[in-house]
Each structure stands twice: as structure tokens, then as C-alpha cells.
Length: 254
Image (cartoon, rainbow, N blue to C red; front, side, top):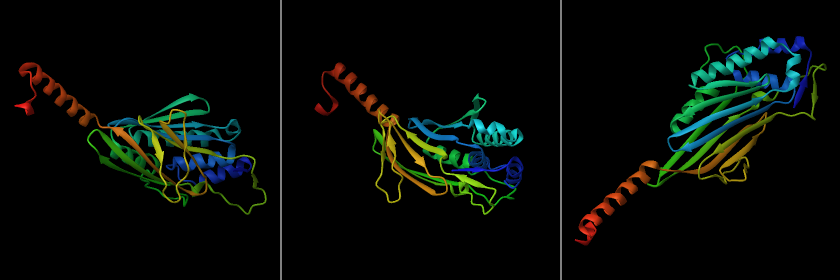
């Protein structure tokens, strides 16, 4: 959805938004300046390491509006990235990438909350973006079953106006995606209200297209290899093999 306003109204609207809410700045930039592609991905490399990667591509029409507003919005993203122990990289004039490493599932939940739900000292704006992630894990010695539940409230992106000078162009839309990647693949659960995800060709990644103006519910299951369990089995096999080579029989054969 796209809302077309003049430059004065754009700056006036921005003055009403709390500058600490970077996601709200993104929302205003999206609906006021053209199509923006906003991808957030959680990539698990292993049970004990992964990265949150956020890729933002800004529409060309953004350059025709206030550059101060754009710089303030980018600065808010940089601040939230630092709070989550991440970094931001400017790939081009209209393309950003935020990378936030995490050590385990609990660390992921903490940093997602720290990045998307920063503590605000000043709450001048009534606009809110809320997200809540929960990951439940079950250890099966060699593998760990992980159940991810992620609720993303994008109702702040829904802007209504009775001003006849504000027009809505239905031929333009906001492209918001969330993806999850795991070494052993991702499965979409059958939970009610769950958004249907789309798998990539290698089945290691699943992507959900989020709907602005709604509460989006993501429910997925993925498996991760347990390096500690695999290492323990490997040590047992090596020890048993060494014992057999020395005594020509296994310990339980005595």
C-alpha cells in the first residue's frame, strides 16, 4: 500500500513519530515513498551459532523526500543494531544490511527482542511495533528438535486518513519477508492461524511473506545437530576401538 502526500505533510507526520522506533520510521518511509523490500532472516549454522540478517532495499522515490528523515531513520537502525551487538553495512545508497550474531536459541530470542522492541525512555508516539519470539527445544542426544513461534504485530503499518489530499494507490505494496534457515531444513507446522511458508529449492530455508496492518503468526519446526552428543558418541567409538585393538575383544565380551 502506498500513500501519496506532499513534502510538508511527510515531515509533519515524521515529527509525530518517536525517533527511537526505527521500525516505525521504516513503516513511514515505506508507505510514503514507494515500494521497499524488507527481509529479515534467522540463519542457524549450528546449535550454538547463527545470525540475524536484515536486508533493506529502499525505493528510488525515497530520494525525493527529506534526507534528514532518512538519515534519522538509518541512525535509529544503527543504534538498535549496536544494542543487539550487531553491525550495519551500507551496500549502496538505497540498500542496507544488518547482521546480528547469536550463540544459541535463547540468545536469539533476547537479541530479537532487543532489536525490534528497544526500551524507550520517551513514548511520544502512540504507534507501536511489537514482536515476540519463543523457541522450545527438545534434546534427543544426537539432534535437537526446535519449535519456533513468532508473532509479529504490523498493525502500525496500517495508516488511515480522512484527508482528501491523501490518496491510496493499490497498485503499490510493501514487501516484508521473514525467513528461517537450518542445516537440516525447516518444516511449517499445522498450528491454526499460521502463515504458510515457502521452501527454497534445497529445503534448508523457509520464507514467510508478512502482511502489513495485521498480526502475523509464524509456527515452524526445525532440527539441529547436537555437537556435544555427536562428539560423545564419537569418543565412545574411538575408546571402544582402541580397547579392542589392545585386547582383541570389547569390554562387554569379558
